[in-house]
Image (cartoon, rainbow, N blue to C red; front, top):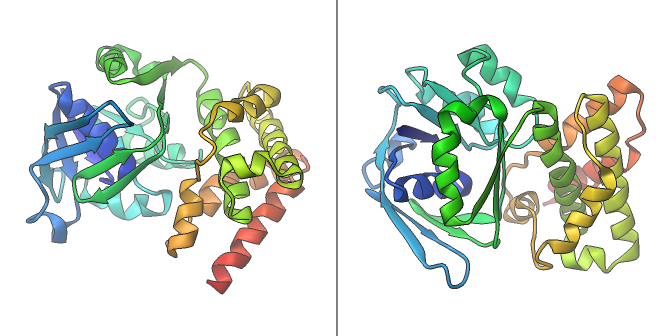
Length: 294
């Protein structure tokens, strides 16, 4: 199949390199000013002992050929401008963005049936154009069950590269299941400046993490998801203790944050359903204060 990658950062690069290494045809959509110097192959440095994946990829500034699958891995605030580079509607659109609100935006653009919601959990970084590092020992890729007829075979092959992949019948469970982990993790690490290991060893910050998880799960279930707060709390026990969130790294580097995309759905859902989400609100306010003074 022909796969196009919109958003050639850490996540898009990881997915594109993995797909190309399996023999899939991969096109990377890059900014026009970077096209001339963009490498003709992608490289992904994997966790210790797993080596480096290298694979060919064609770089374009505008998607003017039909792709079977368009994988979108931009930051949420980059999505509107990035979509301007997509000139032809692909057969299938798989967004791997943070949050939940982008699904409605993409379905308004491409049609409901073409959009297969997805989530990915991995710690990765782009170190140079076309060069990426996977830092976490895991890659968890979940997709809506509607995509299984088209994507089942290739997703199954990603398992050979260490990906853990599942097709989830309930889209709300798929999207909120990630957000209920991501949002508390991102907000608490960013507000505290600590990694996850330090947070779990600090009583006050661990309590805030647990409270934020609980708030997110109540909103998620009110939105039609089926998530278990206790199960999500225990999932942090297996996270590498030195792990930091992407939002935390962006905050330190002075980059724009996905604060609204990650925390906003919980706050708005709290207002919509009359659910108390004060921990989430306070964490977001603390992060906003940090951005105002950096």
